[in-house]
Length: 249
Ligand code: XBP
Ligand code: MG
Image (cartoon, rainbow, N blue to C red; front, top):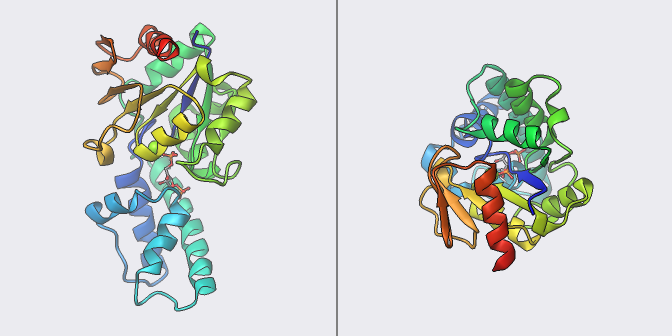
């Protein structure tokens, strides 16, 4: 029986990566007098590395014009990442990153039905604050029984740490919850925590191979399918049916 919904943030609640994090990284490079810029295609490839800091460090490792020593690269990545998060908040505050289709509807429906909700993300807490504050106002946290970010769960997806912690804080078992995810790393993390998973494909992962998700859709307002079932859009009834199906599998 469905008791809890766990939300991923980047790509699931909103398309934050292309026009949010990527642009903010490029502005941070510029502000530090660095010539580096990530175009959409190369950023899409870099998204295989979860975590903005880890993504940046990975990129620096391959650059001839990056600092030579590991410690210096880590130090530069830390400074650039902190600057990026500030610039990301500015972009989000300007209203440039709306929630994806159906997100507000489903969050409201869960709240009305008494379904517990949690956040399980590898992004930094300040980014979640910026995004959800811009969309729901300063008391956005009231909607969520648990908010687990990179600050709480430093092992990034596909590690299941964020999901395990969110389940523990909500006090729900994995088989009475469902994870909403947009990426293969996210689906792997949720699955490793034992959760049924709805893959809500995001722009950068539109064509990604299926990775063990229980159900899939293009967005929450469009058709959702799972083994032995489908629904015209993702609503509570569809989530309940997906979780019941996973329990019988
Ligand atoms: C997505 C991520 C994050 C963001 C950037 O997290 O991997 O790293 O790209 O945020 P999720 P940070 O899909 O789990 O929400 O720079 O704060 O890491
Ligand atoms: Mg995501």
